[in-house]
Figure: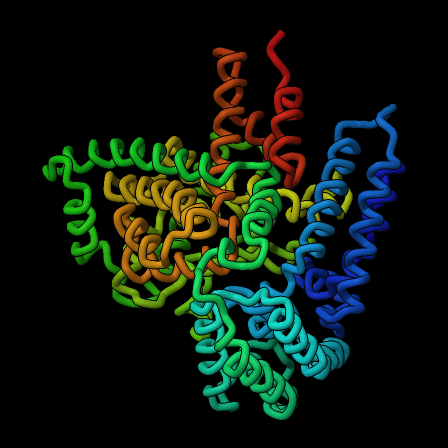
Length: 560
C-alpha cells in the first residue's frame, strides 16, 4: 500500500500522522490491507502507552497550529478530527481506561489472533514469515496485558465481575479446544499442510501457554477483586469516567439523565408504531403476543445456520438492486456474509461488520451469529442486514475507504472520532430500508421497529447501568420488554457493561442525521434531492456530530 498523494499542507500533516498511527497500531494496518507491519503486535505496555500519548499530544498541537485562513472544507474537517481524537486519547490515558479495556469478552486481547486470521494471509513464504513472527510476538504481548491486570488491581480500577467471568469462560473454551482444531491454525490461509502444521505447533507451544497465563491471572486475585457493581459508577471516579466515555463515543457532552429520559420517550413512540401493526394482524394492542406469533411461525425460523446466511445474502442482493433510487454513488467493494466463529458466538451480538481492504480485493464482511438458532428469526434478520451491510455500514465504510479524495487519516483513523456518525448511519439505514420497500411484509417491518426500540432502550439501560446504579437484571428486564429475546437481552446487557457509552452512539447519531435531513428537506421543499443528501452525508468520511451539523447544510446547497 502506498500513501495517498497529499493535496494540501493539511493533507501532508495528516498523512504523516497516519503513518505514525499505523506503526503504533500494526493490527489496524493489517485490517485495512497494509501488510508492512504484519510481523508486529501492538504494545500495550508502558512504552507503547507513552508513545500513544506523545502521538495524541502531537495531534492536538498540530491541529492548533493550522490557521483558519485559506482552509478548504476538507482541511477544516481534518483539523477537527485531529483535535477530537487527540483530546479524547489524552483524557482516556489520564483516566487509565486501558486497565479496564484489557478485560473484555467482546474484543479483549484473547480475541486478537483469531480476528487477524480474517485479514492476514500466510499463503506465501513472505506472508508466512510475517504471520509466524506475529505469533512469536504473542507471549510478550499477553505478558504486557497481564501487567495491565496487575496495574488495575493496584489502582482499584477493575472490570465488573460479569465481564471477568465471561472473559474467563471464553478463554477456557479456547484452551479446551484440541490443538488439532484450534481456531488460529484452522482459520489461517496457508499454502499447504506443512505450513498449517508449523502454525499449529507455534500455537500449541507459545500461544496457548500465553493465553493460559492470562487466564490464570484472571482466575486468581483479579476475579476476587473485580467489581460487584456493574456500571462505571462503581469504579473510582466513576462519574467522570462515564462522562468521558459518553464524549468519546458520541463526541457530544451529553447529560446521562437527559439521555435516559429521551430513551424512555422514544420507546413510547416506537411502541405506538408497533401497536398499529399488531392491530392490523388481529392482536389488538398486544405487541408481545404478535411478536410471539412471529417467533412461532415455522417459515420465520431458520432450520440450519446455512439458511440464515443465505437469507442475509438474499437481502443484500435486494438492497443493492434498490440502492440507486437513494444513492448516486455505490461502493465498489463486495459484501460477504459468514457466521460468527463458534469460540465467541456465545458472547457476540446478533451481527457485526468488518470493512474491506483498501484495494477492495478483500470484501466487506458481515458476520451473522447463528448461536441459539431458533431465536434468530428472519423477521429480525432483515433490519439487521440493512444496518450492518447494505445500505448501512457496508455502504458508509466502503465509500469512506474508497474515497481517495480524502487523506488516509480521514478514511481510516477518523472512525475514532465518528462512532456516533457510523452507528447513527447504520440505524438510519434501517428506516431508509423501509422507505425503499425492502421489508417483505409487516412482520419484517415489526422486526425493524423492534430493532429501533432496542436502540432506544440502549439509551435507557446504558445510562441506567453506568450512571443511575441499575442492576444487571433491571437492564435485562427492560430489554425483554423492548422486544429482545432472553439470549440477546443477556448478551447485550453484558456488552453494555463491558463497553460503557458505546450503546449511546446509535440513537444519538440517527437522530442527528434525521434532524438534518428534515431541516434541509423543509428548506428545499420539492427541490430536495434525497440522493444528493445521502451522497453528501457519506461523501466526507466519519465525522464528529458537531462537524456534520455545521457542514452538511452547506454541502447540500439550497436551491437557487
